[in-house]
Length: 539
Image (cartoon, rainbow, N blue to C red):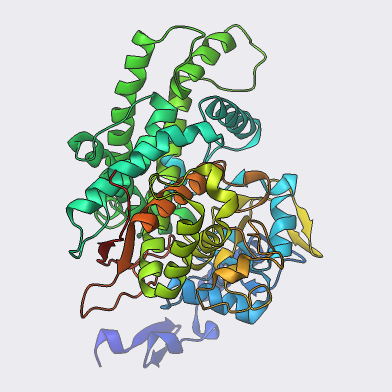
């Protein structure tokens, strides 16, 4: 018998042979070893018991948490092969309009009812921004800017931005003097490809960006400007990488401590995000430095000048809670471009696809434009009151597209009662905007593209109604809503006045969200034909 197959212990003159080490009995051991093993066993059992107690208390589900998925310690509930949209649907289906989902160490509260969302996002304890890696990296993990800031810094930054952007036209009819020339440039680019299948991409992106550049830096770029196209591609790539594996670092931040750098960079693409952030900010730094040299104090041309003026004043106010500094200005401008460019241009692309798929709606919109607007000019903001069906159609585009299906995450700053449940401090609250936009409780034909959803009994367009929150709601409602609506109205009305949008011959466009994009709903890629309408003006 080999040494590995037996163990021999001598006690006096006797020999005890065991066929396997795990068959030993404590009684067969010498008295000293017997006591030592008992002590060791007791210590092991005590250690295991202590670990179980720690896990129990540290991992205990908070009392009165909304029903949902809790999962395992450390990782929570992440074991599902379903795409994120399907997981969200299953969560609502199983647990109702307010449900919890622990991912990693973070508790997410998903709200799928409009009234509850409105109540939650109006609560002062649910206005913070969640501490997520993919958001924080854009602001260098500091409480600056608008998108990812919280507390008094966010309140002051938002208030300052809105006040001064309004000074330069935001929300005012005077801004159409900036937008309409961009509309005409876009139409001229479409004319070059008239009658041929085309993607409406760079021309649209630059036109939308130029409106922001006017407000922020008093500049504009040509349609084919290589520097600005590169700038636009950076913004687009930021949206792309935010929808990738980097989300694992949002909910499992300890992965940063254990994963090798090549995984963090090549799989999570953190190096790409840092490169795009630095490139974007490097581009903006040059603009700010030029403003510092050319500005006339207290005579601002744009938002950057206004900020630099205020920064000078705040240097003499030691009690100010608003951090006016170069980094805050840099991040804020980046926030404005990231939030205000890709969102507007993506919504416009949805409109183009939906018009090609719904020619009856397009014909009705065009008939309204023809009746209300002389054919020798493009529509302007004064025409809005006479273009109620067009306005309703654009609202239906927002509903159907649901570009941000879960909005942006809110942070609970203190334990908060909501609908009889307790939302624990540090938990994340998400609004299931997509669910609201396709809920039969609010919409007569949830799946159908039906502008009449927004027409009241008097034939007027309803901009606000239950179940509709394309720009979120409450204290952190999107500050760029008025600009986005203004741009979409002027671009859409002019394009539909000049052109009929059709699917290419022999092809069928499907106006659906790209299934490869989970956090933002970009429409599936497509090409359309713009057919010039008779009796239209030459821009």
